[in-house]
Image 1 (cartoon, helix red, strand yellow):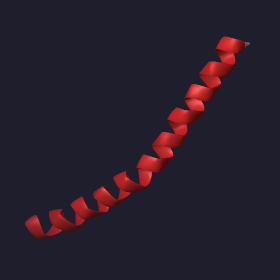
Image 2 (spheres, one colour):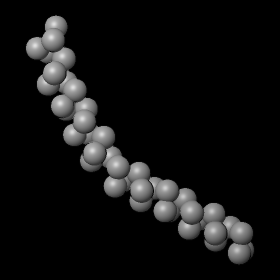
Image 3 (cartoon, one colour):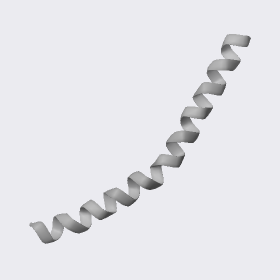
Length: 40
């Protein structure tokens, strides 16, 4: 079990690091859309 779990953890870690920049973009877009709504 341990042998199969180790690679899986590495794969998930890579996925989370790759998702971080995308998540930042999403939050930035949400902020801009919210700002547009308040001004409009």
